[in-house]
Structure formats: C-alpha cells, structure tokens
Length: 216
Ligand SMILES: CCCCCCCCCCCCCCCC(=O)SCCNC(=O)CCNC(=O)[C@H](O)C(C)(C)COP(=O)(O)OP(=O)(O)OC[C@H]1O[C@@H](n2cnc3c(N)ncnc32)[C@H](O)[C@@H]1OP(=O)(O)O
Image (cartoon, rainbow, N blue to C red):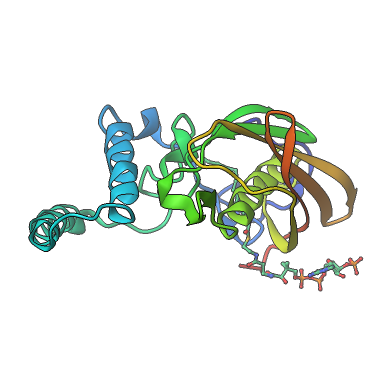
C-alpha cells in the first residue's frame, strides 16, 4: 500500500496508534510466513468443494471429522482483530482473507486503483453466474483502497449502489477499476467498473465518509 498523504495526519489522535476511531493495523510480516498462502489456497479449494461436492452421504461424515479436527487444531490460536495474517497479507490474493475475493491489485495510485481476478465456484449465484451479493463486496473493498490511496485512510462506506449490466461469469479472469470522482471535506465520492475484457459487467458508485476520532 502506498503511504497516505496529508489528511492521514489530520485524523491521527493517539500518537500514531489510531486513525479516526480505528486502531492502526500493520501489514503481516512475510505474508504470514511460508505456509500461510498455501493454507489459504487450500481453504479456498475447500470452500469451492463445500458448495459443490455431491458425494455419498458417508463421505460428508468423514469430511466433517477432518474439518472438526482442523478447527480444534486452530482454535487455541484464535486472536483478536489485527493479529492474524488474514486480511493483512498484502502479497496474497484478497490479502489472505477468505472473506475477500481472491483478487490481486494491479495498480494503486492516488485517485485510481485496479485489480484482477476470478469469481470461483464458491461465488456462484445461479445458472453459472456470480451471486449478485459478491459484487458489492468487491466494489466496497476496492473503494476502501482507492479512498485510502487518496489520503483518507479511515473512511467508511455511507452508501454503495451497483448497476448490474451483464451476468458475471465464474472462473474467468476479470478486471475492476475504482476512481475518486470528487472530494468534499470528509466525503469522498468514488465509482468503479467491472470488466470482462471489453464488456462492462457492472458499475458502482459510493460515498466514503472519513471517520471522526471518536467514531468506530
Ligand atoms: C494492514 C495492511 C493492509 C492495509 C489495507 C488498507 C486498504 C484498506 C482496504 C479496506 C477496504 C475495506 C473498506 C470497507 C469499508 C466499509 O465497508 S465500512 C462498513 C460499512 N459502513 C458502515 O458500517 C458505516 C456505518 N455508518 C456510519 O458509521 C456513519 O453513518 C458514517 C458513514 C460514518 C457517517 O456518519 P457521520 O460522520 O455522523 O455522518 P454525518 O456527519 O451525518 O454526515 C457527514 C456527511 O456525509 C453525508 N452523508 C452521510 N451518510 C450519507 C448517505 N448515506 N447518503 C448521502 N450522504 C450521506 C452527510 O449528508 C454529510 O454531508 P455534509 O453535510 O457534510 O455535506
């Protein structure tokens, strides 16, 4: 991530430990270490299979045994927000968070952020197309980034509107772009476009409002 500009300092209120009402989180060291990326990739495969596999019923029993065993292995290490490498591993797709789309940034500059990636089987809505609910997730995240890159790092989405222009395919490399359209004090108006090559799949616009120091 690029360093934010002047407005960044304007919203610091705790010796640099907080911005707005947010604790400041740092990027995860070495993207969570040598095995974290592989772990997240395997978990994404499991997400795809959890929503698509149709085995004999007893196979689900064996799979549940293994899933419960894995959860028991990790449960002692559950940590508060900002400590897991998930969501802080900026070199991994979706910053290493299973919630985020497994996309990678392809460009980040003040006023414009681009990313590329695929929607997977896990993101299926119906009839081979991505679920309509995952597009706002993609736009919201990239709108957060373009606002961050603009120097308004602790802003929250006040509204977000998506126009669905064409159905969004799965397992096909797509691109998304977000730009800052205008800024007015604490308010940053942003817009974005999701493309399949030259075909516009969806566009969106949102208002991001910079938090006051006391706002969560
Ligand atoms: C560590 C290594 C990795 C780093 C990686 C960094 C990259 C980083 C990527 C993360 C990317 C995630 C990005 C997710 C971003 C969310 O998704 S945040 C979660 C979803 N949003 C929320 O939960 C917000 C909930 N709402 C609120 O908290 C409050 O309503 C808000 C938005 C802060 C505004 O509250 P407020 O400050 O009291 O607002 P208020 O003073 O009434 O209004 C301020 C101005 O905005 C206007 N306004 C406010 N709401 C609206 C509205 N809905 N419509 C129109 N105008 C509005 C007002 O009219 C007012 O305008 P002016 O009068 O000043 O002209």
